[in-house]
Image (cartoon, rainbow, N blue to C red; front, side, top):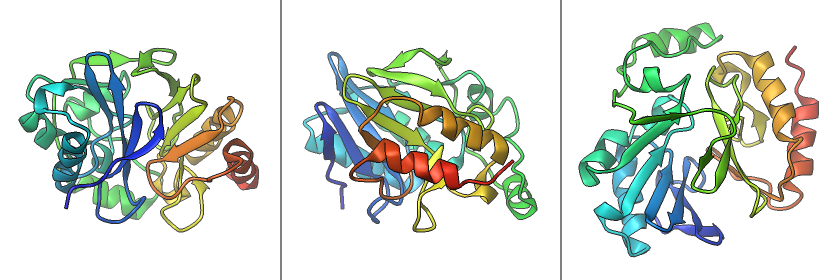
Length: 234
């Protein structure tokens, strides 16, 4: 079944990239020349994302850009399928992440030994990147914010006009409660992830979207600040 897009701000929609609500969230953003997709979920997410675009009245040619917040497989896994659906789409990624997405460099080594063992044996999807960005660049009205730690080139996105923060995996709630970096074991550099969280809660926003898990529905900035304050990673 196709995912129904959830409007979270004018022209900005959240899509469940899996059949489970908030398991993986991606964003669709309407622009003057078409749509921008932020992250792609896993290979099985393609039908849900294209179905959401169709529900919004879009055709393959209307998907103009895909922005990848970082290189983990649950964020880039649907990329090849979406390129097949919309061959003219432009793929954009952060400078530090692009060579990994393109298969020119290996994925970051996570701190946790078990996850590192699994990562080393995982067949990562490989796709070329047409354009790279750095902190301060604008993607679909969002300002790119460097938030390394979950991966070394991880980025979050801030739409100042709508007071909307897309944290990607700088915060996450895979284990029921919101945590910095999703969880310590998921991070390449946990102390750096905490510093990035501290950086994010210094910005002004009223609404947050997490890649994994349900975000705070009220007092988003204050509640993420509380999560960050409880984090003890040195």
